[in-house]
Image (cartoon, rainbow, N blue to C red; front, side, top):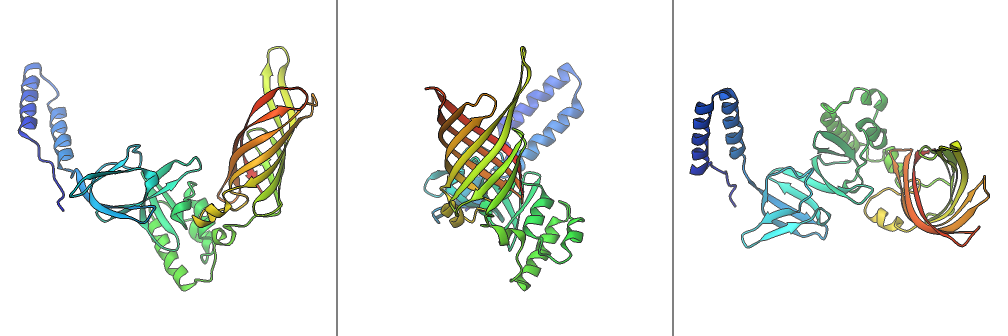
Length: 336
């Protein structure tokens, strides 16, 4: 299987000749022109196709040639050229992609959008890069897109003298630390990090502080799948006639987390009710005594140890009249 280097064609050199004549005729920019020549010829020198292999989520492996491009920010499908045909793969179809000696994996964010990550080190903890950003995670399927040091505190806090070690870690030396940690972990297999101890832990009472709509509340665990989430929050705004308005309300939800088993099978955390849910919701506004009851579907994600994001949509009927209303719930806060 060949790697094709693109050599400038005769048309390319004709183009350069015409451009030189233009510069001679109209003057100026000769240094800029030399830079242009250097830039374009170096671009042509880059191989357009690389030897590669794609591993799908179904376990199939397909080898061929893959276009050499930036896949971190690409929205297009990956094209793989075999001896017989050209195949196209979306990111949701790809578990891993190999380009020459580099390995890339795909992992999804909280909205289900998948991204490529270059896997630089594989071990008890893995080291990834995406563009100029660096990530660490125990599993490919659950890469926490949080800052480097909080991620290390989550995944590597069982390392000896960790507090002192982590204070010196930067993006430039993280590679050395991950190698050392994995070596130490292989010799101390009984040791567990915060991530490993708590990957599926759900406390009975979780105290929450809400920041987008200021308030506080509790999520009380009934079982692995069910919880009662009760928050007291305040809507706020400004009216030309009334000035600033504060409208406190109580938000009661009985939640059923429907993807617990799927998240466990995919090595994704269910820590502190991290998952997708259906819920029966009851809202009560304290000032005008109005209330509604409805259904909602949403997801809750916990980043690191304590920060959470909660997003839900649904519909409800007002109990004080015959009207229906659309429900949306966007929350960001801290969970103790």
